[in-house]
Image 1: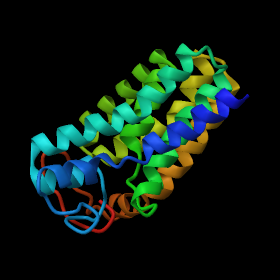
Image 2 (image 1 turned 180 degrees about the horizontal axis):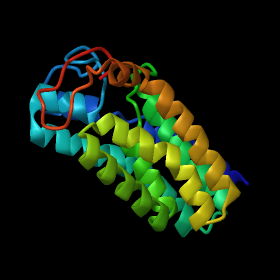
Image 3 (image 1 turned 90 degrees about the vertical axis):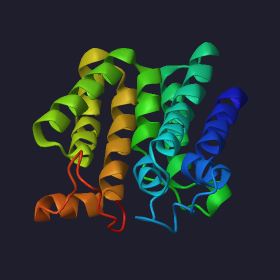
Image 4 (image 1 turned 90 degrees about the horizontal axis):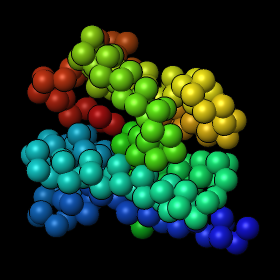
Length: 203
């Protein structure tokens, strides 16, 4: 029990290391919470510092989701605990204790946790993202579609109730965090992949 609690707490703390802020500080770039769209994520870092900074940010965000779940798996924790660990890392990214609880949207960290929880569900989510992105050229729509379908994939491919519930909660939070993108999608003003990104609030 104590081990499980420690893993969940540790995952939240790992998630709280905001890759975007740390990368920007290390590379002498503007604080992503203040520059561009104001979102501390890889997309905004791409605007502020280019591909290298964005790639480092994306890698860090994914690993924040992957590593805690892998540790929980290595310690032979149950699926509910593994899901709790992945969810805690995701929450850490959204509400980082080290950075005033002002975090990013969490797609990359959620994806990292998902892949570590179940490779087959992660592959299905990636295929969904690629398919929607190729068809619409909207990265945000692709991410949201993949996240909404992830619980169904988990139910079909793993049968683990904890994964279904946990991924459903993550999907709800991702929808809330992307409400600005959803508004722009409905208005037809959301930037497409390959277009010059619009630095609208929350992008």
